Amino acid sequence: MRLPCSPRTVSCRHGQESHEEKESERNTPQDSPKSRNFRDCRILDGFLILLSPAKALAVSFALKLIAWYQENQRDLPWRQTRDPYHIWLSEIILQQTRVAQGEPYYQRFLENFPDVARLASAPESQVLKLWQGLGYYSRARNLHATAKIVHEKYHDRFPPDYALLRQLPGIGDYTAAAIASFAFNLSHPVVDGNVIRFICRMDGIFDEAGSPSCKKKIMAVLQERIDAAQAGLFNQALMEFGALACTPAKYLCKENPSLCPFSGQCHAFLSGQVELLPVKKPKDPLPWRELHYLLLVENGSTWIHQRGYSDLWRGLCDLPSIGPGTEAGNMAQESALPPYGGFPAKGTAHPELQFLKSYTQTLSHRKLHICFYKVEPGSRLAQAIKGDSRYREIPLESLSSVAVPKSIEKFFLEFKII
Ligand code: SF4
Image (cartoon, rainbow, N blue to C red):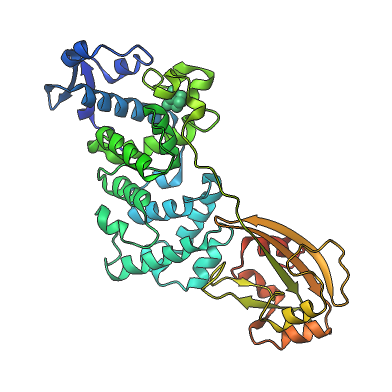
């Protein structure tokens, strides 16, 4: 989104300095507070306004940030609009998703649901199918729930109010600030992981990244520095600088400090502590969970299972599985192969099962080890699957229309099942 840069926010010294001149001062030593008190000022509606040192710093920060952004921003489709529906859609898709991966999903959602009313009236299965491959399916369900609320309660218009946006399912502090500022130019700073890294380095914040105390300090800094007249543009620039310029390993000052407009004020750079910031929380190892899936193909059909809403991959479809509570699972366990509670070796012998492939997948809260087996048609196990009411027969040619988890889709594609 390209927002116009307001001419009102031109900072100056002695009332004469232009925006460009300000930029040419990158990396010069900071002025003494004494001289700055007299010299920092801004032209506002033709009047020369003297600024406090803190406000002067804030104005200078916003000017440098926006100037950098206008030179370096990526051309992304959701930046060409101020439509809150488009902005909201892009922000939800981009949570825990890279831009390159999220962009086709954004386009596909807009093609299928050009407005919030059409998303609200779509069946959940269609929303989940379009979401397939992005993971974190609760985002898709929240997306659908929010569309329904906006349709029914707000008559297809997102409320131009941070607190009301914040109440919608799947919209947290960051997303509410993004929609409020990008669509409505409301002055709410955005704080995502990239912004946390940038501001922790810039201001020497050593609290654990993402902790409440860290976020509180960052929010206080940004509330001081946000340019209220162009809050959307300021936030876009802030996020883009964190994403492209002050990255974990390839930050601008590493190669050449003069490339970064903030190297003259950046605490981490000036104190040689860039690598130490932000302070990361030590990660607990994720627990493992095993899943053993059975593929039965007979007469051009296979059998699938609709997952419930109390466990992993809520509402998606998977395959019959070996596990407690299913007849097929009990029978496979009866035969003691494959081992339940241990990973089966490739080529494991079993009269009715053929091991095909295993995959690992990391979710936010656990790691999965997923094994797939082919069931011999006509076998006892095949009869058990076909007789179990939890499994549904589906022609192979219809399988691609069903929403399945990423690992199962990968298996289907690799074994040319879809
Ligand atoms: S000087 Fe380095 S660490 Fe500081 S903001 Fe610039 S790129 Fe980031």
